[in-house]
Image 1 (cartoon, rainbow over the protein chains, first blue to last red):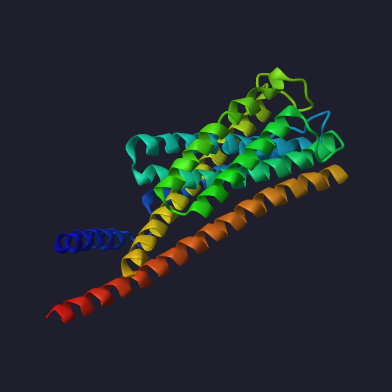
Image 2 (cartoon, each protein chain N blue to C red; image 1 turned 45 degrees about the horizontal axis):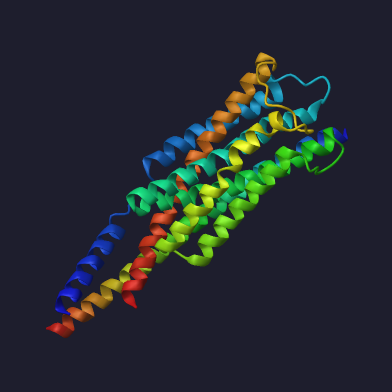
Length: 244
Length: 55
């Protein structure tokens, strides 16, 4: 019993030490990624509205493409990162992988939701409808449901190991949808345009690339923030548990 | 003209969504820092009480 108390005390000291070692300021990565994504986004806004030419057939609404495509890309990338982090947790049993998985799930949900909304607005101007059951759109909606299911499952089960394992299973099932989204335009005939970048004029391609890089940097910036948040929440939960 | 309105709506929703999310994240980080400091203080108090009892 004395030994158990001693072990518990040592563990508590470890948690206290860990919580005290958390710097009150922001990590260096926050400033670097925040600064780079800010500059990148400002540049891409300038390129979208002043540098890229207006598309002849679609007109002004084609410019939605420069924000819709990067958001969809982040939505898919984040699910890939979520699955990889989940597998990392399965192999190493290191909770830091789980923090990364939870962070990526949250950010991915935000981006895929915005991608669906911007895509819907673009669809209204080009197809004359807000929504159609096109294979790519349907597969993207399934991915959105996968994200929501993941977040609900993790929230319901709390910060436990079984919650992390259940999350990994769900992410492995869900990640199958990512290549389906990407290849759906080649596999099935639908309304969604194919991802052919080679036919784009240089100015449009350059604008798209700058926008893609800027949004990827923004995703990395959010990853650092949410990862830190997950870490702090875990420490706070452990300290609270030690009081009970 | 209506096409431009759709373009503005798409960009407004996208940027507003991201800014709101950024603000929510910043508030959550601030909140958890405050909570952590409060819980840490409680743990220290509890430890002090414990050591006084032992003496």
